[in-house]
Length: 596
Ligand code: FES
Ligand code: MG
Image (cartoon, rainbow, N blue to C red; front, side):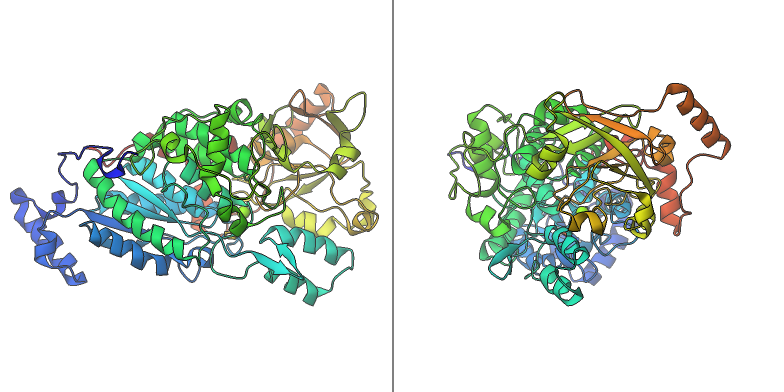
């Protein structure tokens, strides 16, 4: 086995922090920098030692409980950095907490990105440990590392321990959808609802389901940005402390080797991440975030790559919401290296992609074994064949995705079992303008919602509901749930929580607020979805659509609520659509900015 320390030669490149502290041409400035950093507690000797200065980008705080354990782990990261001969500067990243942030945590990803870019670029840092966890914190950190392009390594905070209720696993996020249905159907009361939901979150860490947090941390490892086997270690486990220490040590070596994100985040790495996302049953937020990271790195990645490279990949990981188990089970079963080894046996992984330990993903994962075949399936016994995302288009939008791995039996029997047309369904729509409208009206009997109805959510994209709300997966009216209809087809220009098991058609781009066809749809119109052809269309004739478009233009376009904060207005003015990453358009022009 190759020794990771000798896998790459050391570089002779001078440390970038020397430009601050070792500057004979401008002794005044050097003195100024030294004076302030000495004030923090470093000695002159340390600052003049020529040791690399390593940042710890701290995403944990009281406002971000999913990542809060990083405050503890940072102590072990520090010890690793010092042990390897580095100097540590820890600093806060704009906190993001998925479920607590109003109006959406999606709004904050680009804000955290902007802030972190300024910190990594503007301070004397030679490398950085990115502390990742809750949904948006991982992409925000990786996007910034891509733009600045100094040596960077990610450390996942890890999932919570498994949740349990009456002997059954309860998964964070996922249980909420079930508990809402039970409450709507009168099976539990409010107290029961709270008990059931809180049982799913028994410890520090991020959501223990295959939601967006587990997905994005797993993909960070699949991209090569995290030490192999580390994304899934549960937050409270001893191994988590150990890998924090190893991560600290490794970043110092990466600085010596000048191993930067641009060598790791290649197109091959992104294609590996797409393949892995299908095999793990990953979140529908992944296409948005991977597109964003790729654009900031300057790597070509198209929304259609998800279907081309990901659709036919089998589902191997049996985690909620697509499956049965939770984070602890997945870690014990072998986590990502075991999954990648299975995918490698079919030639589905680009094995030469480099990772942060200086070795390739192929070398890291070759021979990794599955320790529990019910949690991680061997590739010849998958949970589902072809479990990736379909990319749909039509007169409603240019691109939208559908997670096929969560199409359940009830849904298939009800909507996809017409022998003449097994891959298509159509029906009249009921249109909601934003989540508030939906919550007010869903149980209104005058809407006439039946099991034929398609529910449509619009005004929920990056512009309409700034940052894009996770609201497309809508429960049916309570009366229908009581009658045994647990899911209606849903479609919309918002996102969907990765913890939801709904096969919604979501991330529709362009959104209604950006001139997308969804803005022309009216309650009562019929929509047809054809999964084989990859289309979703409103069955309204062209003349009528033209009339509606003119009327909408005269009315000043699709109306959405006013911005409540300066950042909402600024983000709305610059954000792009979800199929291209919903990044701040123009920011992608700034690439590899720390390189001289
Ligand atoms: Fe933060 Fe799920 S809400 S990880
Ligand atoms: Mg989420």
